[in-house]
Image 1 (cartoon, rainbow, N blue to C red):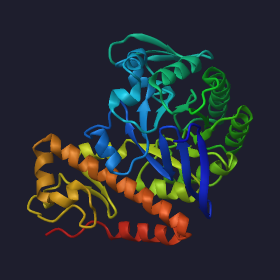
Image 2 (image 1 turned 45 degrees about the vertical axis):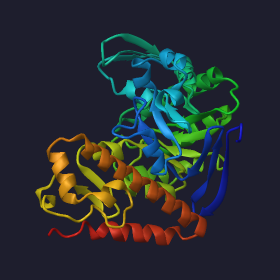
Image 3 (image 1 turned 120 degrees about the vertical axis):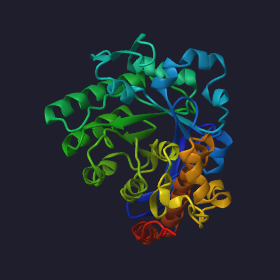
Image 4 (image 1 turned 90 degrees about the vertical axis):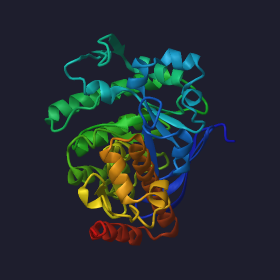
Length: 376
């Protein structure tokens, strides 16, 4: 097993890349989708079942884990991997995004962010240094530097001010992270939808030096066209030899478009959250199992899918358990959605390796355009 962190690109197709991120806890095949395990669990899933879908890495949430059960407690219990029974790589976000969303409960300064817990009102002070300490206590393999993410839309002055603060925090994160062989620290590019700010941010991050680079500040309500507009240039502003991670994205067609533009890593709560609300994400698009059209339908959700929901249960059953509020409904649809996402990532990796990405993407869009099968 490798004892260091590295990234190897094995094939390119246009701007898309496929390769391997190597860590002491195992390899991550890219392009990679990271299921989100906010509070040390991917909701409605056992860790071994998440792995069975094809996931190489999970995402944990610094903000939620620091509040409950606490980073020091997790450390004393053997670290996050042991705590949640996941022995493969874990990436943790810095906590910045969640804290920034607490607009009524926080105070932002140069030092960091003071905020009150949404759980019990306890006051916390989260700084770049404390974020690095929490992520070290958790034992995460890929650590994200602490940044500020302004909500869009915002004026250029506000976006520039935020980006500059994030770059100062990036340097402090790098200094606090120190030298930790086998562990990686990713910098986060900011700058909203402004190309010149993104360029300045990328240059600042590269000067500091990170093991990987994230594209932050997108998927915050700007819409797909605006996001793709940024992705037309932002990945190319970042070092070509390091992994590129688009934070908080996204829908299947968001991911496909971002892979075409040179992104390597993704995370999103969508497949698990949709599974809990009765929505299946399939190669034919989204299917709402709560709709009455499914109640007498003995056909599988997707006859070409090998997940347990599609292999062993009918649409009628999936409709019933969701209407009845049975937990198995969330379990089966979350498993299906995560399985579909990992199948999509494998398809993208294979297509890039074969130099057939354009054909794969054309087929992806054509299949989605067909829509769901006709009702009985």
